[in-house]
Length: 257
Image: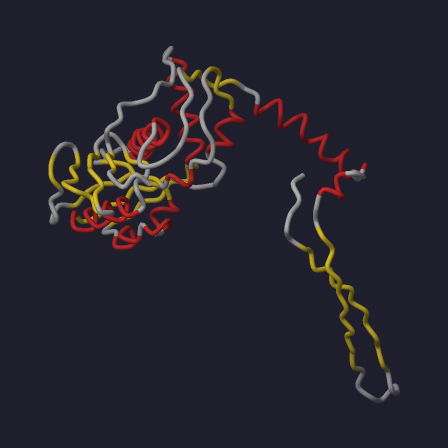
């Protein structure tokens, strides 16, 4: 356990009851004292046996589930900006699974790169690995947004030097602006209504993607993002497909961040 520069404030509460007489009103007086206790590696030296016993009991069953292989990856893929093979793959999967979930076409998908926490390793893909990559309980959403808001959304993406977008999106970042962004090879029509696959965190304006708050329509799914990814990988595996990095070149940045 790494040393934490944090301290736990432990409050010790003593209660003094004063009863003046059987006919008088009783009053509680509280005397509060505290001290700071450093939380660091010293606590690892003497593990709590009972706690270890409880953890070990569940760890065995959890590990047996998390070690289940659901597919194969052709190569190592890491998250990052402005785009990487893993961010591209993640957005493509979300688009596919939102279309399946809601039974209607989607123009493009976007999710926050910050929600992709770990790389995907080459070789066997386990349930535990997917949980480590997508640890948050984000659910799928289908958003309808006016083109002018989509344009502003992509400018925000540019100001952050990229987010995870599906293969339908192409743009160049210069001076923290989206230059000539296109959706499915066409310039953004400010008056058109676009259907967008995303997750609830982003749909709520998370990671500064506030144009989603102007949604004309929003549909929510109970499907967790990680479960959608698991479903996709398992389906590909049943069909004999290995998970491979999709085509890049979606976001080209000159910011050199």
